[in-house]
Image (cartoon, rainbow, N blue to C red; front, side, top):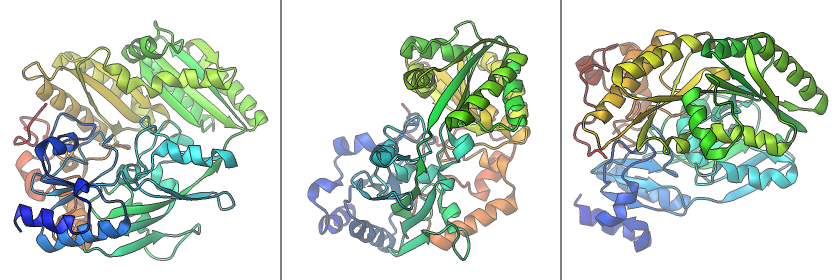
Length: 484
């Protein structure tokens, strides 16, 4: 179908301001948070209702037009990168909180609702939504489902998949599916888990039912400084080994703490090689006992400085630097490349030492901040896109980190998804038989591969060309895409 005819069909039921096709209107949608790769979409549509989404998808299916769903654009793996000959489907106008039910402790919301807005709306009932990505002030629940996002409290309360009950999903044919249910268990295959983390490749989410939790009676944070990263990593293992499951346990290396302290003034020890934040929540008695045990373990394992928050303001202050690590990176570098890999906790110190070696190899600084409790690393590779060759070095540096995660028994993503950023490393993570199963699942939902094509699951040809376990060498990812 000709471009102008496609625009006309869309404007038959959408307001003209909700169908964008002029270049200056399309530019804001050319990338998500991974700004190293950019692509102008053919058309951007901004529906306001589920019925409009159904019509859009039916048009795409009938005209063989690719469609990429987009939320707030805070993703960090290029998952919402547009297709040059496709439609970008923005879901930001679907931002209604449809229902808060304090009896069943659930909220029913549209995909464009911000993560933090759910907790704000549930606050009068003494409830909140547990997953809290660092971008929670801006990221949407639809995007959280696409990437199966976590946050600093996912160690105790789980990822997005553990905190949702039901989805309304529109297929590429425009059919509406209800996946999951209001009960603890539902019959049939667990399609709810399949849809969560599928990166918009199987269907478009139009409504979400999430679980709400009672706000804890008390929460306290222990902040410990270590003169050696190995000691900090060992302390993480000791705390978990003692049967303690903290509400959150995060670690930052020296470069990170030096950077964020100037940004938020949280009171971090600037001489420490690593800062470990460990939070306990629950009743007054539970927290008092757990904080005492955490302090003892940290002291025995070589912490040189330990502070415990005395009130809510101090607790939030301790967390402020961890939450602000990504924006704080902009104070010391024009650009950063944020990686996301997960490793067994026992390998934390080993992997961090190897990252330090890689930093020297590539001549690029790296800030390390991560969910220490579940081994989810977020190395921030600092580079300058204006310097020739630096973005390629950052890519290769990141690829080696991901390959290392696989080699120590981990995975190439914990919560950011694969998108286009890590698609080559999927060839190392999975074998041919496994990838064939992924493709079969994709075809069952999307037989013409129109939903977010080219993302997350590599073709077998791509893997053959790059060679499993060697995809980070001599590669040029998406060479035809314009770069920043």
